[in-house]
Length: 138
Figure 1 (cartoon, helix red, strand yellow):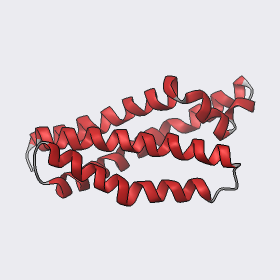
Figure 2 (cartoon, helix red, strand yellow):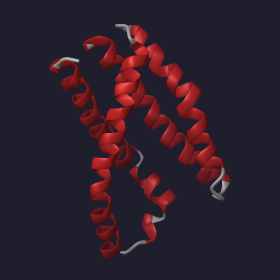
Figure 3 (tube, one colour):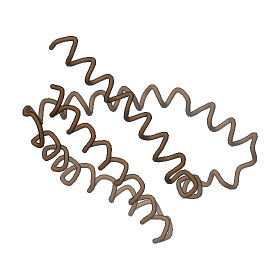
């Protein structure tokens, strides 16, 4: 594997963190904080929670790099085939997993649906972007 390959994988991984900060920030941040119970926290507790979350961004990046590595081997082709493969991965693996974790957590129906739509939507956007990047630049 070439340097180009790893630069594409790492670049897409970093892009996923940027997408996540937008998705779980300005787009759906208020709803997500409500679901997580963070809106009831005072400023000090919220700041402590954010501090504990910082190392998790590194873990998330590593997990996303694994996801990209595997997806790059599954796509194996250029152009729209990368997006098509990403959509199949999302529909066959991500969607059922996110649905299961949303259904079985004892939340109200409204909260479960909101959790599901936010998480599944984010994963859909990421995988389509990943499929495009991998299909175009690898």
